[in-house]
Amino acid sequence: MLLMFGTFTVLFYIDGSTGYRKKNEVFYLHRSFQMANEEFSKMNSDGSLTADAWQRYAAKRTVAFPEDRSVLPASTQLPMPWPAILQDFERMKPLQWNILWREYTRERGLDATVAEEPHDAQKIREQWIVAVICAVLTGAAAFFLLRTINRSISVDAEAVTTQQGKRVPYADLKTLDLRKWDTKGLAFIDHDGASGKGRIRIDGLTYGGFKAENDKPAERLLQQIRAHFSGEIIEYTSAAPAETKAEDSAPA
Image (tube, rainbow, N blue to C red; front, top):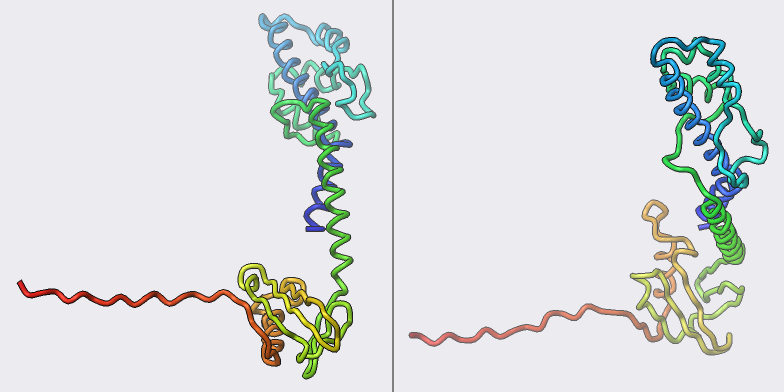
């Protein structure tokens, strides 16, 4: 849980702080390549467009970013002129803007993959909210992990040593509740005697687990307790099906 929530916190933080903004920059740059291709095609439809005319035209064009600058990286140059590759007449002439786009992103170290739509300020804000929630859950998971990581429970020939370091002789164990052992790996032992009155909680997943490759430490722990236990055991049992008496069939 700690690893999962911690990973989510980092991922949502990256998206909220820089990730979505960088994706937006790529989205609008990509759209500029499409626009440049369309405008070059129209201007050169009769083959009369010259390199000088295109260069002058393209040099005045800028990337059409949204008015809300908060959805873009803080380092984004505004207004941003069309990339130099789009102002190159000879490179634009084949109308292969996809090839130019891949070259441009490779040179700038950008991801050539483009999102289907840009991320608005609300979506970016949502990433921050989820990142904070995941950070809180990460803190909670870390708290419980640190609280339980050093806990242990052990048994010997005479007593059970609880998580708090208290030794409870087997003679003081009165009730062993196993109703949640098979479903949740939980068992509860009520004790009363010289060691005092209380309840011992055995969490099988915390104290060893049930993995066969590890020889099921939790199951072995419980078996050792049961071997010395003489009190009342509470557990679910499957009732045997009631026997039904076959009816005698009378001869016709």
